[in-house]
Image (cartoon, rainbow, N blue to C red; front, side, top):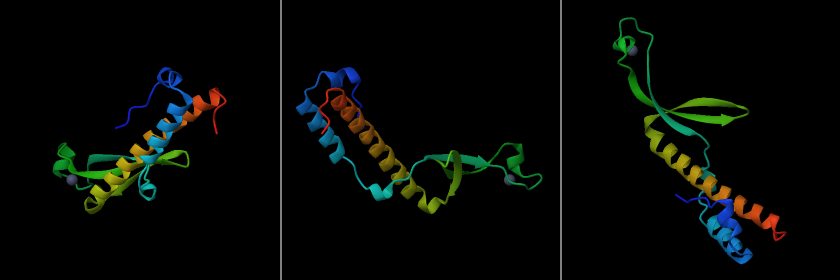
Length: 118
Ligand SMILES: [Zn+2]
């Protein structure tokens, strides 16, 4: 995982170094078509059968769910086992790209402070 540099670290870099680092971070972006924002959860569930073991705490599952935030609220979507690995890869790629983009933004902020954004 990429470590985001602090404002102090960035302030000690030259404009040339900042631009090179920004390009390097941007070059690490991958598979934007796999973007999927959310957190993959695995949870046990209770069914509605009376006397079922789950009513005593032995839950069914665990089943995978994707908790995804959009339009101001979090929705939880069931993830079938057959696609859980694919969803996990999408979520990982997305988090990695988000970290890289956050790094690019910090660099561009520093360049803006120096009136060197171009
Ligand atoms: Zn049950």
